[in-house]
Image (tube, rainbow, N blue to C red; front, side, top):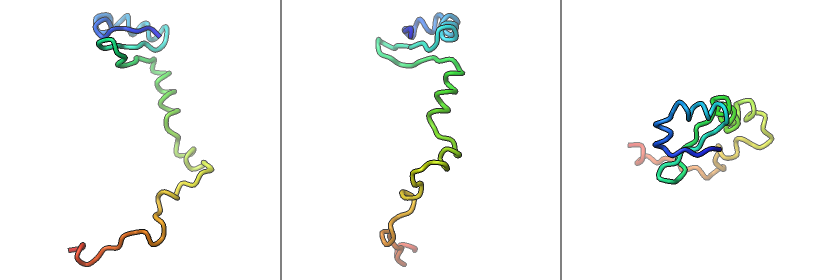
Length: 85
């Protein structure tokens, strides 16, 4: 992955974008430290799709999905008349 200082990426944005499309992700540094990465849209969509499971995948999981949603019996706090007013 090629690294571009932010001032070069700004000054040569067309070249920066062309390098991204031809060679893949391009790193941008700011004051010598990594700041951002420009990636082709197809790769971004692939990464984004892999980062979250779909609803179908969630429903098909083997692990229980309700254990953390339902409090244990008797552990819920009850409202008193004073807290309602």
